[in-house]
Image 1: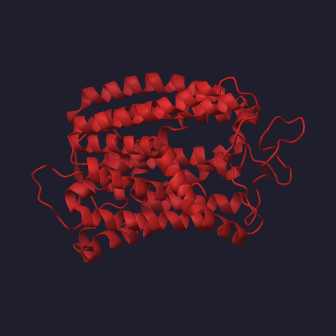
Image 2 (image 1 turned 60 degrees about the horizontal axis):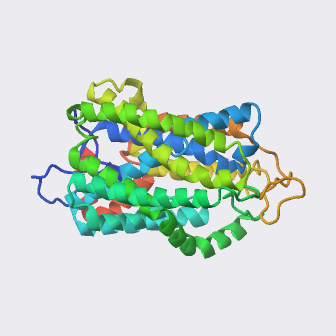
Image 3 (image 1 turned 120 degrees about the vertical axis):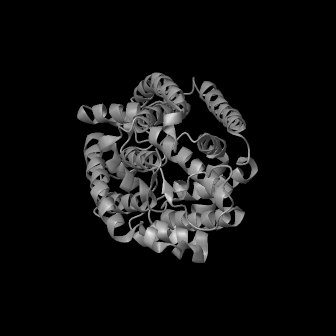
Length: 416
């Protein structure tokens, strides 16, 4: 059941309104626990997966305990939690468009684009906020559709993207050569890295949107469809659907996760190309399975200990940015220098790797980074609860809310 709680924090927190509700200009005051729990769980899962990029290790070079940790990450987390996050973003973006109108929608996403740009340039090349902020404009064209039509749009876009990715994998199946990696070429000083990221931000944002745009918009449409149906705010009305999501999603997602784990033990180019569609398809299936499981618990009033993730989910953008700051300061050359060197260009002789280790820095493997991610991510749970008890919302969320709502952001402050 929906319980009255404080106003939403992250843009996706804005639940779609009941159809008869009139257009409003102030903040939403009613929250359901399930979206916040899902977002908090997804935030921890995303950090676990992102550790490979922060620390700079190569999945297919993990051995022993590190390989076991990588297999667990690929099977249970890789692609799953970013899919949940994207669907929740679409759920919230469509809700704010329906409830608040185009003006608030555009101001909100302009603020998100600014936050994402600063995150990319000043902190980390893996920012996703700017991609979400720009691709969300597609919802202006489709958010008015019925849930069934939104599902159809998601199916068309997703099938198109996956089809192209699978065709590319088939075309390169016989290609020999080392596997590609997407690790950044870091420079020794912070200023030099900022300058380089500032120069590449807009071109790479456009490139990323063109490449991943259809898939992400498909996920946004799935989230918007869930909003139309009230799947997350009224899960007790959708037990049958949630069961099908849990059984079908996990039934497909776990085998594809195991296949991804196998592909990530191989260093050849063909394995890397096939890993991409396997990751995304398995990630979506697994994400729907997780939504189904937690949705059934919420429908039965048995979320229990999962509720501890809600506070982190309510200030997910602040926590996401904090994770990037902490991890880059630990691993990057201008911080504690705990990451190892990686070099682009020709493979080192006899290594068979496109990005061989330079051996310059201490290396962290998948097991160590998994432990660090759990330490930081779980520490954010009580810290988020403490912060919200004092201030009501995260600092970045408050800023975005202020830009989106203007003077209305201060209304009913005592209820926030």
